[in-house]
Length: 593
Ligand code: PEP
Ligand code: MG
Image (cartoon, rainbow, N blue to C red; front, side, top):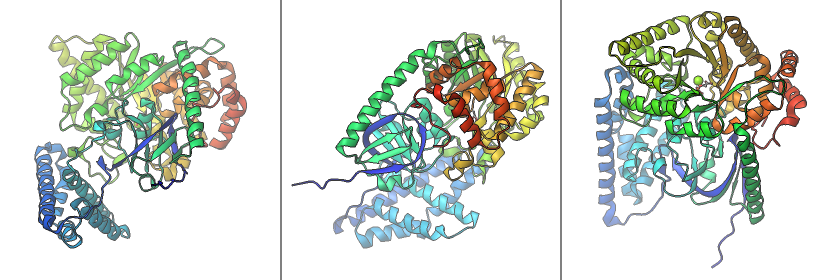
């Protein structure tokens, strides 16, 4: 029997993490359920199939109740969303129609549920009312829960995938992505998400090729299709022809070789030709990643995103658990510094199934320091763990999402209370821990002089600073064109911050993704940044760029750059002046791609 030859298809998405991978596709439905199959049921088995559906619904009901009952007082408001879903379980539209479909069409419960939900979604599609839109999301989440029970899958099963595959999903949350097992997952493709989304950031940290924002990926790619991901160009090739496969195998080999050469240079000092030293540090999300920062040549951790240890779990970690993680990280890095950012949950980093927020606009909601000031118990537990870990090396503390001077005062007050109580308990900690603010909200830029009088350092979170300054969702691919780190508005803000920091004698760094592109280095040095912190895989290339330029030239270059009217012009100017120093452009994801 001759098999039909499948045709090669080349698609384009958003490049977020460089590298090439070739492998079999593994489709993951939202929430980690394998893609649903359709099969017919014998008439004698229909009763049992309905029973199977009913018990999946019953389990969903029990799970929802358990989550609602275990939700702490403060989150009660958010558990209302689950109560709505509980009511929906009795709803004829979802429950009744699925049973009807199993019986009438003699098909399996998974397929019946899927087709009923598709029908419901199309009814909602033409509605603009936000309340009804939320109900659509409820139906989708709830049906996902029932589906997982039907298929015997866990809530999120990415960590359990036991084959070497490339994930293809409608969307992967930062919590899903942080569970990726590097030995199994070669790369991933999603339909949603943008360059500065946390999903993209994690892909770069894990150093796996990824393409996001590839519309219809889950309908165009099938389970077990051979696919190629080119993370630098954003291309995904389905069912590649033999010659394409050979071409990409060669490109992959070439890429890996050149990367190894650059990586070997990662340990060299980050000093400009005219003798200026710049701190090059690494960003990390989970304790184990400290090793990547160290081996890439990072001179410390410039941003430890601690919220990832709070995700994918049913209760908050205890002080002891946090202390164990922090002291490990601090010890590995010692004597180099570890900047621990206090919890930055909510926004796009929801805690987990039981803590889903019902905020209409989470990015502008109770996230970061706002959340911690609302929950001093959670905040104090974390601060105690951080201070206790400070005896193992050099710790710095950084507060995220600060938008007012008062927030800094209140945060410091709580920190002092925690320090006092540790002192009373005779627990040792470093009394000279440096305190900083993550500048990522425009109001903090404007108030920089006042904030500087209260802290030891600034770190600029350009990912959020751009999101909030340009009013664009950092994960939304439709407004990605506005996400331009080289926009004159961004450069002016950075310049202002650097001037304030210099004037007040405090240290300033950039820890947003902007810092991870070698082509941005002349700009950031010319502006006056003392340190740059980035995903570990970018460290060697950024250090390489620093070693190839003169600080004096970058300062002059900035004079011209600041006169430009658009990001495109600044970028052109950069390429003209510094483009020849880029390492064959192989590891760069440019602004204009
Ligand atoms: C930023 O916003 O630039 C930042 C460093 O924080 P995060 O990406 O975790 O929001
Ligand atoms: Mg941020």
